[in-house]
Image (cartoon, rainbow, N blue to C red; front, side, top):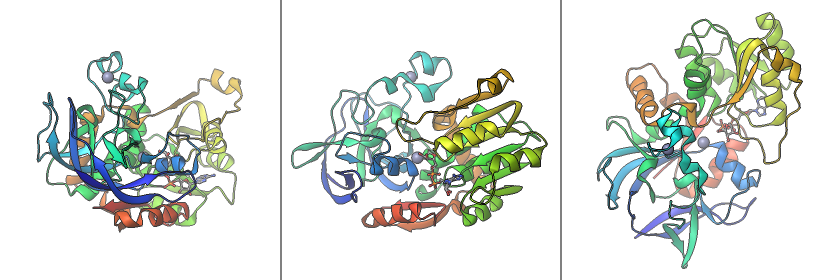
Length: 363
Ligand code: APR
Ligand code: ZN
Ligand code: ZN
């Protein structure tokens, strides 16, 4: 069988949209017909080479679709089920899953660009193609692990549901699950893109008091206000750390870094009060190192991170969709552009130009 896919053959070169061969799902694998995939910055890190990855690769990791076929032994989904992709499959059996940390699942010990048996289900001219994060959502269909799909309710449009597969959960999870921000707490969010807007939105949802948005793009700061920011700081005009300390009288309770630069990680940490917490979400270029004063840790600050929302993806994704259906969480408003797969490179130009909240590739 075939699929149309966006393939990265060489870094800093456009994705090639072409027909590829898709092999049958094997044991504990699922063939999904994707309906939509959101345009996330993480794929761009691979396209630019900031995050090295074996090539060629079918990118995309923020997908939603319909199960088309299941391999032997699959029990949790059947053809016709609606699913979100999980770029961190969780097995439910390893020590991480058992201890309630499924986003750290032992599946991550194996390469995440092939199926668990170390082979690909995509071929082009007889040559295997890698599956980005075992999702490969920039394809009209792909084979994924059973542990890598999350069944969802059928009444959420799939072009909205796909957003929860990365941006929404990756942004909201750190607030809800990692920091567990309490009512009234002060929060700073560095980076108000497709992921960061969700940290802001979650902070509003849990009842944070001051929600301070930091970005270098005026438009993003306007959007941040629409999603719940009470204060905005343009880091291209003023020092965000000093501004946050002034606004909060000594630093925020919680800071979230959703950009992926050494500078912004350090700024997020420095903007916390004594005893505060900084949570890193952004992916920094490989080789990045931090310079921090350990005395600030002695003052009981926490510097930590969050991977795929740091919670329980199998229940968090349906929970966020329930919040959307209850009118308590904005999904529709996150989307600036809907584009066909043939325009995926243009979608990344728009992302780099800072002109969109989120674009969605719709099949
Ligand atoms: N200070 C503050 N904000 C900045 C800075 C800076 N120095 N530089 C860039 N930004 C802002 C951009 O203007 C943009 O609004 O960071 C935001 C990044 O948003 P997107 O490009 O939409 O990226 P997104 O998909 O949200 O991903 C953000 O999270 O999951 C990771 O890999 C992902 O590292 C990436 C990060
Ligand atoms: Zn992503
Ligand atoms: Zn596991």
